[in-house]
Length: 446
Image 1 (cartoon, one colour):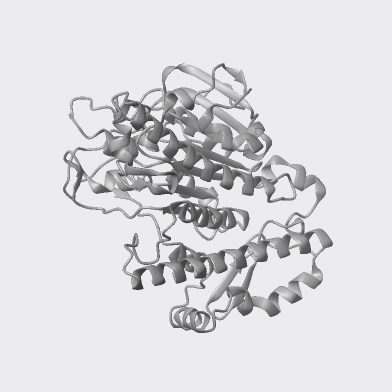
Image 2 (cartoon, one colour):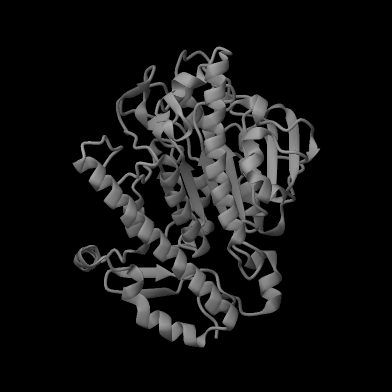
C-alpha cells in the first residue's frame, strides 16, 4: 500500500493530516535518498539579547562541556552547531538613532535595514522563511508557512523610538511592505491545524466538541480504523503515537482554559483570553503544535517568537519580578545579570523540550530533528550594549543528513547572518543568489 504524503483523515469540520509513514515511501532505495527526505525549516526567536558569558562555548571545534545556558540541550548536543561571529549589520542605527529592538527583529530574517517610521509606510525585506514558503517547499504542504508566538503584538503605532510596532512584533515578512502576523492563541492554532475550514460545519463541530468535551479524533475514528488495518506494524505504532500526541494537546488545552477561566472568576489577572497563565506551558503547547505540523507535513516552514523584541514582561516562573527589557539593561549590575541568566536559561529549557521531542519522533529516515534545520537565537548580543554583531545563534538538526552537528563554529567577525540562510535554503533545494546583505553561503556547514 502506498499513501500520498498529503492524505487527510476527514470528519465533520475536521481534517487531520498524517505523519510521515513508511507507506508514503514507495521503495527502500527512495527512502534512503536525500531527495526523498523532506527537510523542515524553523526559526525560533528570543528577545533582548543574551548573557553571552554563559552562552558561548570556550573553544572552537567539537562541543565539549556546554556553557550554562546551553546545558538543557545536552541530550541533543550531537545535533547542535553553535555559530559565533554572525551579524545583522542592518540592525545597527546607521544614522537612524535609537530603535535597536525594532531594527533587530525586522532585520533578523531579512538582512534589510527597516525604514524608520511609525506610520503605514513600513518597509523591510522578504524574510528567509518566506523565501522558502513561496517556493516549491511551501507549495508542497497545506500551509506554506506557520507564524506563531507567545506575546500579542500590534501592527501599527510607535513601539520603539519612532519605529512601528510591526517591526518588533514579527520576524516574518512576505514582501518588503508586508509583515506576517503571528498566532499566539494555542486554541486558535489547534483549530487552524485540524479544522477543515468549511465554515458552518467547522463552527458546528467546534461547538459540539466544546459541549461534549470531545476530541477531534472522535470525528475521524472510523477512517482511522480502516486505514490502520492496511498499515504495517511500524506504521500503526507511529499512528498511535501521533494520535496520542494530538489527544494530549487537547487535554492540556482544556486544562489551561479551565484554569484561566477560574482564575478570572477569582479576580486574578490573566494574560489574555485563551493565553495560558504559565509562560513555560504556553511555549511548550505552541512548540508541540509546531512539531505536529512539521511531522505531519502540514507545513515545512515555521517561525516562533518566544516573546516580542523589547518585551518587558516579568518572568515570575523563575523568580524574576522585574521586566525582561529592564533586566537586559544590566549596566554590569550583578543582580540584573543574575536575573538575565535565569531568563535565558528558562528559554533554553523550553528549547530543550522542543528539540528532545523532535529527536524522539521517528521517521522512515532518522528522526524529525534529523530532517530539520532549526535556528534559535536573537538579533541582539548584549542587551546593555544593543550590539547586533557576535549574535547568539544556534543551528540545530541534521538537515536531512547534510549537516554535521556537535560543533562550535567560529566565523570571521561581522559575517552576515544572511549567509547562513543562503546555506539553509540551498539544503532545502531553494536556490537563492542573494538575501538582504548576504555575500555568499556560509562555509564549512555541510
